[in-house]
Image 1: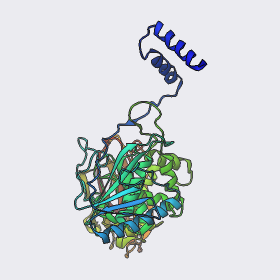
Image 2: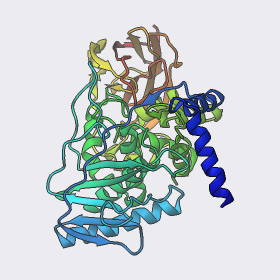
Image 3: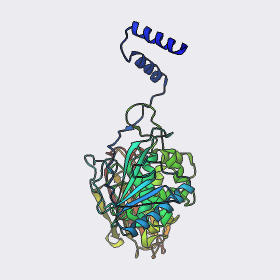
Image 4: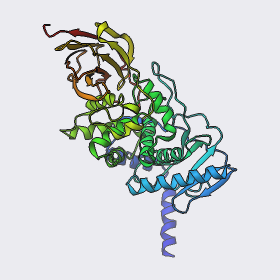
Length: 464
């Protein structure tokens, strides 16, 4: 009775004092927002949620892991489910996290993977629209990842997600691991660039299965277009970034993937106010920051340089380079190489017609067999202004094995010169030129620091 009386008096008093609705709320909100820290860094906009495929097929739910597979072919569904269970076990036991419940959107709380006859067109969550000047070429892809709704109760930015796989994939098991990793990463960090999701997904697929699965075609395409960046805003980039992660893992965790996991987890964030999602730190930011703390392991420009050389030593050349990265033996495709013979020097194999994106590289191989004793190979680089250039010369024996390398300082100087001493053991010299830009890469934004260059290769006798 007393409570009812007080409530009625309060209602009467409120009615006696007319006020504009929402004034108190707006005032309280202004005080709260004024006292909270505000994020002034970069943001990315929410993309449109992704429609799920029509679900009128067989569904197999795992009792070992929170995953479910939807598909028409029972054998393919079973193969996919086993691979998803393996992926879940590896990622969970290695600290990559568990998938969030999707609230029954696929008929249960599990992470859903759909096997379809043809993939839907990619949206901006998967492939951003190419900016003017960016390549719009997209390699064949067998996996799509979509999201449904944000997860309000998560401690960091998160969404519910699912994956769709083209059922015609030849390596369905590796594709399933690749898809699962991307879907979990999308849940954990919806602001991260899709190119990084693909790179990390390919890295995880290789860690779990020893194969890049359905990322192989895209990695081979990026190898063939070595002048382009591995992880950038361009819609065709991403999968080749697994090579960057493989190099980081070989350097810092002995190939276990633990350091890469910590980089990825360290790039997650919480957007507590404002529109869109906080876009920093991202994976590129985490890589640059942690490498800067490692005084003996170099910086991100040196990482790009190291990976540029390692990309040459793939496939049949794997293991021939110094400090070989285990992953490179399984990388498909080869980088394009301009070939020059000692007898035909001087030569300029690149005269500005090829432009390098940030992180992109060009390769020249000089056959020096027949060079007189005491000869030197001389290499000049002249790049366009505004970026930082790297040039590395690798001496190779007759079997293609690395004998040693030398490099120019990485600096914002468009000119560089390397004199390479030759002896009887040197059969060829590989020259690798890389545009490392002038700033840290950012896969959320187009990078206009594409530059041309010219390289001249000449010979000199001992008397010179």
